[in-house]
Each structure stands twice: as C-alpha cells, then as structure tokens.
Length: 569
Ligand SMILES: [Zn+2]
Ligand SMILES: [Zn+2]
Ligand SMILES: [Zn+2]
Image (tube, rainbow, N blue to C red; front, side):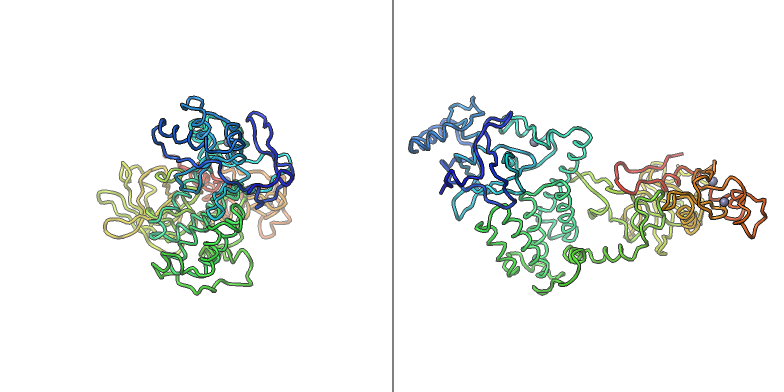
C-alpha cells in the first residue's frame, strides 16, 4: 500500500546540511500516521561475510522491478568503503523490523527520514500489516523536518555523537546536540539518569525483589521524560513495566489502569492497529492474563478497585502507592520552600531516623545515580538527634534520640574512630547533625548510622529542643517577611531600616530604642540589648557563629547541585 502523492503529509526535499529529508507540508498532529510502507528489501542485520552478503543482496536487487531498483539506488550511501554500493546503501538505510529483530528493511521513503536526538516521529514495524509505520509523536509544524531516532539509547551527547559517527557516519547538530553549556551538562546528566532508570526498571530481578522502589523509579522516569520533552516509546514501556509490577503482585486494580495507559501511549506512536496495542488492551481488560500474574499476593486488589471521583492528584498518589507520602505532605506545616532560611523542623529536609533511606535499598527519593553503581544524594537532608549516651570502646559510639524519641547509634568508622571530634563537643544533651545519613544494619543486627566521613557530621552545643527553638526564632525574625521587611527581634516591629547583628548576621534590630513598643521594658533599653539579654540571643548568636550551623540554615531549598559539607575544624 502506498499513499497517493496527493494525500501525502510530507515532501522529499533538501534539508540544510543533511542532504535529502522528509519535510511536513501541513501541520501534523501528534498520533497521526505519517506513512506506512512495505520494504523494498529485507536484509539480515547480523554480519555474515561481506562477500556472501553482497552476493545474496545482488540477487535480491536483480529481482526487483525497474522502479524499485531505481528507488533503491537513489538512496544515500554513507559507507562507500563497504565493498559494494549495494552493501553501503543497505548499511546506511536499513530500519529494524521489530524492536529486537534480526532483520532490517530498506524503504523507499521511510529510509530517507533523518535522525534527531529528540525526534518528532517514531518508526515501528507492524507485524499485522507487514509494514513499517511512521507516527508523529508530537505536533509537527508545516515546514518542519520529520525526524526519527536512529539510536536505541539516548545517552549523553558525546556518547551519542560517537555512536552516530560509527554507525551512521554523520555528526548530529539537532537542537539537543546544539545546546550550549551549561544547559548541555544539565541535559546530559538528566538523559543519563533517564537511561539508567530505564535499565534499572527493566531488570526483572528488581521487579520481583523491590517492587515499590521500581514503581517509584517508573514514576520518576515518567516525570523526567515529561520535563525533558521525551515522548517516544520510553513512555509506554515505562507504564508497561509498572503494569508488570502490579500484576506480579496481584494488584489487578492498578495493573488495569497501568495497562490502559500503556495502550494509550502505544497507540500514539504505533496506531490502533498495532498488535502490541491489542495485547495491552487485552491485559487491561484482564490483568490476570499476564504470564507472571499473581506470583506474589502482597498487593492483591479486585480488578475494578481503582478509586473514582477523587482529584487527579490523589488518584496518582493511589496509582503509585504514594498515599502515605501524600498524607505526610498534607499534614506538614506550610513549607518554607524557597524561604530565606531552612526550617530545622522541616520533615523532608530533617527526617527522623525511621524516614532515613536504607543503605542497601535504593531510595530514589534521596539518591540518584547516572551509572547504576555510584549513588549521590539528589537533595539535601540531615539527620538531627540529641546525644543521650556515649560509648568509647575501640571506637566512639553516640547513642542519640531523634525528635520522635527514637533511639539509635551513630558509630564512628572514620580514620580517627571519633578522635577527630573536639572532645568538648562530645557531651550528653548536645545535638548531632549527620548530613545525608542512611540507616545501616550493623553486624549485631541493630540498625544505626555508620559514620565514615568527618565532614558530614557536626555536633552543636545545644539540646535538640534548643536547636528547634532557635530555628523557630530564625523563621520568625531573621527571615524576610512577606512584604520584604525584616522583623526586629527586640520589639517585633517590621521595617526596612533595621540593622543586622554584626556578630551572627542573622537577626535584625532597631537602631534606636522603640519606646512605644517596648511597654514593659525600660525605655532606654535598645532592642538589640533586650534581645541579647532577655530573648536568648546571647546564646543563639554564639551558636550561629558556627559556620556548620549557619551553613545548614542557608542550604538551598530549591535546586540541588552539590552535597553540603561541614568544615572540618
Ligand atoms: Zn542530536
Ligand atoms: Zn526593635
Ligand atoms: Zn547575633
């Protein structure tokens, strides 16, 4: 089947710097089938001897009609050193017949579609039609070039450039490759993360062993794809992976919704006549048809158990099993997100011990990796707890109590085994702060924190409650008010003429006594003196002069770039 020229949505034309390409002659909306084409030739993708391959190919080409042969030889040859022109054309133009197929096809029109690293169309071999289909995976403007992705992985730019040079002999200058620094580095990191997540999710062992984490990984992947404007087969594949997790664990309600979403996303890129879409629709009707359905029953739900009539956000929380997290977020005090100083009572940045990530389970709320081996924090967090006991046998062990009253141990596996700490700080009733702390299972089966690097731990000479009180004062007085003004800690007056405490640089005071406002005090007492003597600023100011504490209060609350470290004194 071929569409008559009059109905075509595109035209073959010269594209700047790329030779010929397909360009849209009308606006093509997302999901439209741009073309559907029989192969001129089918060719094995694996390598046999060039000589034999060349012979077999010549034979097939001689069996083509004159028109077909003309079409074949009009295709571009990037591999003029391949032995014969025919072999060069095949190597340049073959498109896979199926995702894991060992055969490729040469297509008169589809083979002319150029590559872009963020493509706007997707090629799929449709087994039922025995044709290759090209679908718009996003809206394509009139005059815009139609592009597909030649690579199976969207790696960082230099890896992509290497692969394209080696396998296709061109240098890509698509809008992703053309990005300048620093956007480029940022995109590279995110693309690496997407690819890594995709592989992590695809690992069958993960799906069985740590289903919840994989489910979170899928959600994260989908979010990243949305942010990075990626609309290709990664999306239905991710939904299908999530479907498999739900089905494996007998969760038919979520499995159904996830299969429906996979089918919908697949339809956009393959059409409703795709056999893959049909199979997904069947799984959506009855998730128990999935071969590994019910291998575990921990999440069993009835097939029509999806909640209805609830806001979309709540539905998503249900779908991804994040209701508890959503609940926590709702009950939390209004966050100081983006506020000037960090609130040490913030549950997300200062989690209690039970909320800390486990050292061995990959908690993607806290960690990220670009290679699957090295994990780095993806945000700032810090464990705060008060020292209630001290053991110093072989190594220092602090028994600490967090804000929930949970007792745990911080064991020093640093080079100095704890001797690197200033002994005057190691006291009961003081507060320890552990940056990026993780739960560690010790050999005696207890769980605590294994402290390895001196720079991630700091002891503040104040109780946990005292530290929270100081944080409250910082929130109330030190931070700029909504109107941009500062608040005097002495009299509570807001003004933009206040003077900063020269010692700590956190708190602000009137520069003259505010007689009228300080009703109960001597009119001569200046606000700073009042706060110093009566509102605890004497002690607070001293604490705040510790760069470790002021650094914590100044941690950025929006984006995350580098992990924070306490200065080792
Ligand atoms: Zn590119
Ligand atoms: Zn004042
Ligand atoms: Zn001060």
